[in-house]
Image (cartoon, rainbow, N blue to C red; front, side, top):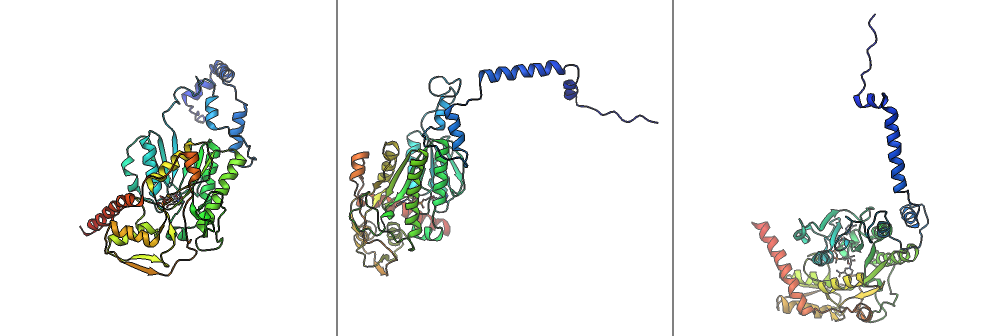
Length: 400
Ligand SMILES: NC(=O)c1ccc[n+]([C@@H]2O[C@H](COP(=O)([O-])OP(=O)(O)OC[C@H]3O[C@@H](n4cnc5c(N)ncnc54)[C@H](O)[C@@H]3O)[C@@H](O)[C@H]2O)c1
């Protein structure tokens, strides 16, 4: 009878199970004891707080202790931050950074030396708005929908991601879930959070001009309410996270803003008029054209957002240009800038269109030292040259 085949063992296993087993275990035990003696498993308040913050089942602790503090208290830290973790500038997340306002904000932050991460689902934003930063080691772009959670290590969050024009928000309504996710992220990593709210929270205002203390006049079930009420809820959530979870928050109420990189056909009045006049189509005025709006150039808004983020004030702050124009006056400025013969066409007004809009910016002037500097007549030509290039450049590319 042939003997059963012997099992072949791997040399390393044979070694561990062999004559050197005991010294090997003893050496391992000694090393582990030395390690845990030098770096005990911390039970400090900071660590506990972080664990609580990341545990959704636990009640939020109203304590602004951040992950940065955890790093500062790490054993072996020399000075405030451990060697090797020191870095220049902030790490900043801009949600909706591929959009109109977001991309100008990113330019500004990169320009001053910060590291910027953009997350965007490209619903209305375009990669072209950010392509000049591709290849920059301080810039990252992630395709992501903010309604899904994400974990990123950042110091500040500018939350802009939200369909912002009527054609888009009526198609894809509120972004409350996105705001909730970003507030959760801010809480988890101890980041400062800035919400880009809107003058639409004032609805069809009964007070003129609108001051931040005015609570507004919004139709909660109208066609625009998914946007107006969505932003009102976003403000509520932002304040609740501040009061309940101790996160640092900022709220900006943005009034009509225009400039290069705006979506061309998104139904917002300035982009509508400019695109129509350039294409030699009549400019569409809804209603009698006497409703008023104020128009802020995008660089003024970016300045206001950055000042607010860096300030010690929560807000809300109105960020807008107090110059007030009727729709017909706006059409005249577009005629002056593009084509004096551009025609106007009247159509029935849209539902719940506010009759007047004009920010009172006293609070922003006093507390942020901010006020707009670019008038409509100065800003509009800069937008027109961008639109001209995009409309006719794209047409040329298609016909080539
Ligand atoms: N431009 C204005 O006049 C104005 C006025 C008031 C408030 N705001 C607010 O400012 C912010 C930026 O507006 P904008 O004018 O630049 O609009 P925009 O449409 O150009 O930018 C919004 C960006 O958010 C992205 N986005 C939308 N939903 C998203 C999602 N679920 N996940 C990830 N990305 C998403 C879009 O793709 C786009 O890049 C918005 O929150 C808007 O409500 C703008």
